[in-house]
Length: 70
Image (cartoon, rainbow, N blue to C red; front, side):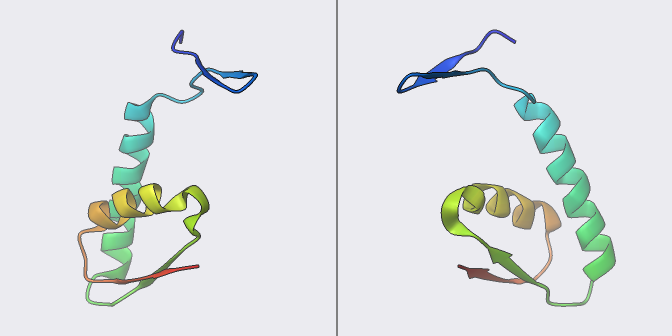
């Protein structure tokens, strides 16, 4: 993949491409929208790193919902 980044003494290389992750988030959002249409689900998000993923997922759902952060 070739796009390595370095944090302190550690080097990291992408394992999954961003496009593949976004595609899965879109698919999961569609499934949640289908299963919870007409309901008001609550997304419980752990702030240590999950808030960006949660924001993408909630946008992909496209339904009314509540969000709680812990």
